[in-house]
Image (tube, rainbow, N blue to C red; front, top):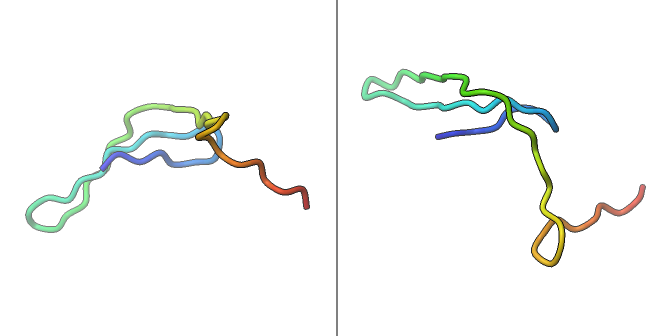
Length: 48
């Protein structure tokens, strides 16, 4: 599986489990979360 780890600025990791159950993770580089906007995007958070 490939997962982003972090808040806005993130590291992308590739994680896999081998046949013996050992978990291996490899850093694939930096990524940035970009929220979707518009009709099918994120709803605005209510002000607290």
